[in-house]
Length: 241
Image 1 (cartoon, rainbow, N blue to C red):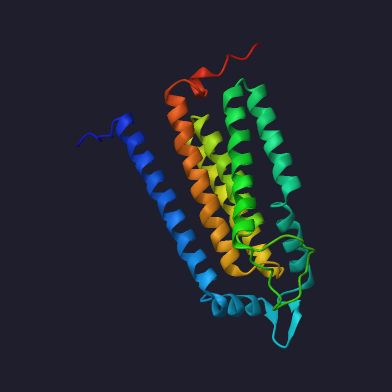
Image 2 (cartoon, rainbow, N blue to C red; image 1 turned 90 degrees about the horizontal axis):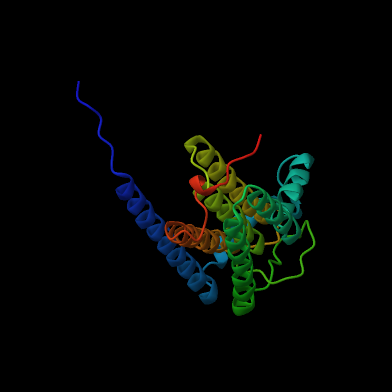
């Protein structure tokens, strides 16, 4: 029987970095393409068709599905609010500090704050108004492109996932964390379209930009970790009895 062979750890690590770089580049490229379509007005037909598909024919104030679905979407969309994202970030930062990973906690704060600032600046730069095609099912007071909830969720949840993955050794836990982060990001973005407060291209652009930011943060975290600036699993202090 032939023995199984495995790639050296450094080869696997370099492949991971190249994959992350490719993913970040793809996200930024996709964002640029969407932004170009939005600025030129070519995305309007697509946006209208998707928004109307989430409404009962003949009544743009009535979303499709049972009444409980609207309640679920309202609850899901709150998971992408600034308050909830800040609270979750604070909880994870507290966990990392308690676990002896103070540098990772500081990096996480910088990464999420930077992503939030980027989202705000992009909104100001594109200055796109909210959809007026269908009724808004929640109150909104900011600009539309890119979706702050979609980008904020991607920045926060995916960056949190990336940091946790870089400070944990168990593969099963890594897969679980990334699956939860990705699922939450997708559901929050879809809820914004369902509730009629964002054009679909707003959400797509938010996902692209936020995912690219999270991947860049993962690369930076790995670079800092290799130089001893961010704790690895082996750096965590031993627990007392």
